[in-house]
Length: 150
Image (cartoon, rainbow, N blue to C red; front, side, top):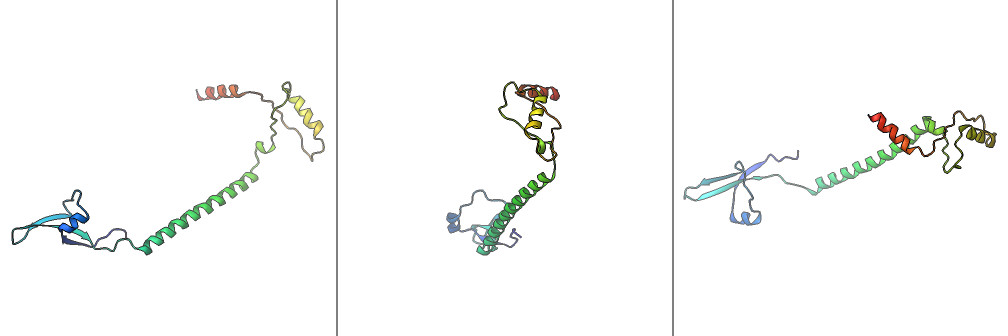
């Protein structure tokens, strides 16, 4: 356990005051008594435990390093598994084509469907199922999002 339960009352001397001055003594850890000569003596509770040892510190350091290594290995493993799961799951994005910088007048979906049919006829069993043209619709999407939130 990290708590030290072995204590002993020891007299507080002037040399111990200069070595480690008391900030604000706790009432249950400091007691003042009067001896037979009429002098006040102050006693404090001293922990009699060994304190930190190099061996314990090195074990703790090794444990922290092992935990960090474990977290790095788990992160790599999870990233690899995430890629495997993504490849196993089929979504519309796996079959979608996004054309960047098309001609300004190319807004007819049938024209794009014919383009893909005519230019890629030799692909094994591939066909155009659906064709949608969305050009500069950021404002429209923002308005629809705000409308949905209302």
